[in-house]
Structures are given as C-alpha cells and as structure tokens.
Length: 329
Image (cartoon, rainbow, N blue to C red):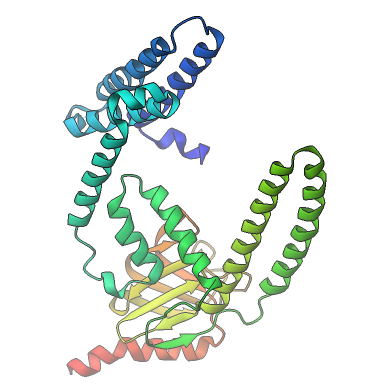
C-alpha cells in the first residue's frame, strides 16, 4: 500500500497528511505544557487542519480542479479530525451534526448516481461494489467492507448463482488439506499465545484470541468460497470465478476465443486458477475487469483458468456463443 503512495497526487496527499501531522502535534504540545490552556492548542490545530490544509490543497490542485466542494470537503474533514482529538471543539462546532449533514449529502448524491446498465446481470461481488461504492466518498473503504461481508456470508449459506451450466474448478486442488494444517497450527499457536499474554494482561490476551478467531473464520470462508463458486455459463453471460480470489462476468458476445491452455503462449496472461494448473485460455474483444481480493483489480483482454472438464466447457461455450447467430438466421 505504501508503494502506491507516490502515485497519489500531491494535493491529495497533503489534504490527508497535513491534518494527520498537525493534530497529533497539538495533542503532544497540550501534554507537554499543561499550564497552557488546552483550548489554545485546540484552536491552533483547528486552524492548521482546516484553513492551512485547505489552502495548501487548493494551491497544489490544478486550476480546473479548484472547486468549492473540494475546499469544503478538506475543511470539514480536518474539523472532524480535530473534533475527535479535542472534545471541546466537537461541542463548540456541532461537528456531529455537520458529519451527519455531509453523510446525507453523499448518500443523496450516491442514490442519484445511475447503476450500470447490466447491473442485474453482474456477479454478486460486482453488484455489491457497483451499488455501495456510489454511496461513500472513499470506494476503497467500501470495497473492504463489501468483500468481507460477501466472503463471510459463505459461512452461513451457499451463494445464489445465476441459472446456467456449472463447471467445477477444484479437481486436483490441495487447498482443503493446506487450510486444515494452517488452522491446526493457528489454534495451537493461539492457545499458547493466549496463555502467555494472560499472565501479563488478560484484556490483551482476549484481544489476541479475537484476532486469531477472526483469521480462522476468514480462512474457512475463503475455502468455502473456493468450493461453492464454480464457473457458470448462461445464455448471455460467462461468470468466471476462483472462489472470491478472482471474480469476473463477461458477456458472451465479448468472448472472441476459447482454447486449451498453452504455457508457452500464455505466460503473460492473467491466471485466475488457484492451487490448480490452468487448462483453458479465453480471449476478449475488449479489456474486461476482474475483481480480486479486497482492492485488487485487473483489466485484461485474456485470462487462463482451470475447469474440471475443459472439453465439455469449451464445447458448451462454443454452443452458447453460436446460439444467437443460429437464432438470428
């Protein structure tokens, strides 16, 4: 994540980092100089996080991007950060109400944003991203929540798949035994760590145990997704899945080629097979988007994947691609 920081525009970095540095500094000064009024440091932090951060952001932003909305967003974000650190500021500026107002504006704008034309044909993860990212100013945060909710749902029920031909993708995989071994090691390590931490701080021990249990549940849900999300071929769309590690749905009219996998020719092609060797390669008329784990995302013109019966899959895909032509004739 830190490796991507240089690619973020300087104005965006400053709008976040300037308040993130000045507010902790004000808190530190308030502790070092208790004889001074705490409101003095709160005021200085508020000025820097709101006024200075806004002016710096506008100065670093190209002229065409300097809008009142940008200034208001940076200023309100800085005020909210100061309000979290200094309760006296929060009470004086009615920041709770301002935050609710900003949330209502974002919600209203998001609900008015149209959904993709093929929204109802998308896969479940794609629909979740398309719907919920409209309602929040930070899509990365939304993707994190939507992915986890979609993943953990596999612990309670099998996913609802589109009606069509299903093709398994797990024949020959050893993921189950690998996850079982990892789970056993995690349980043993978690019990030992809990015992050691409990002697020092019981709360820390239970916090660590909570993290361990969450990790085990995540691993179990990930494995369940691999086992219960096959490739699906419908009359008009191809749903390509490797659990929730890779998810993508492609209209059949955009599939321009399907053939057995060739390691020499397909060395640079995106491989969405997990713990199994790919045996099918698909080519697309235009770049297609594939959703990975959390924020991972790729737009590619070809993918390689594994299906348990590649001959049957290629035959069914060819028949489905030819069906519209037959109907048209």
